[in-house]
Length: 228
Figure (cartoon, rainbow, N blue to C red):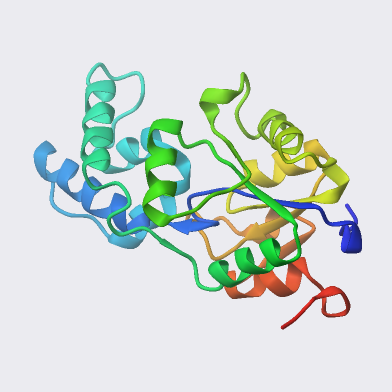
């Protein structure tokens, strides 16, 4: 897709690993889960790289269980209970994001979030961080979560913009697939939670952001930026 350029009307972000670094909430939760399961702590960076895959993937990683195991769901619920107890305690915006959001507001460009994180965890996190996006689409709101484009199509309706006027950013292949299927310009957040052996360069995004600090320039090429 071609960058909307001066026609840019909205930016939609994935949440965990793209807009907000939430890994430091999940790392102690996974370590505690392992302790309760009778296992020693695991490498924190391995946990960090899996955060975008959700609670099921984290339980599978932490306890070496599969969803077909009878005790898988009770352990997943335990992980979610532990997470709810510290939700947002260590989460923070990635570097450069606050300035980017300020620029979007200054240029009256709408912004929203399309996430596979359930609303019961998304809303408290956003409130704790003081974020007020124009649209928040969670899996609770759609029939088909990402990589289906439904979340992004709903986001466009709520932000009153067309897909070709919108940029979508995400740190997982499913984000880029969803953005492409919706007809949006896509940016792969290579600074996010990338599994070992994977690479954002392989996802086919229109452009890759190595650092969160690069997003402002990628969204607003020099000739179109209102200010540095």
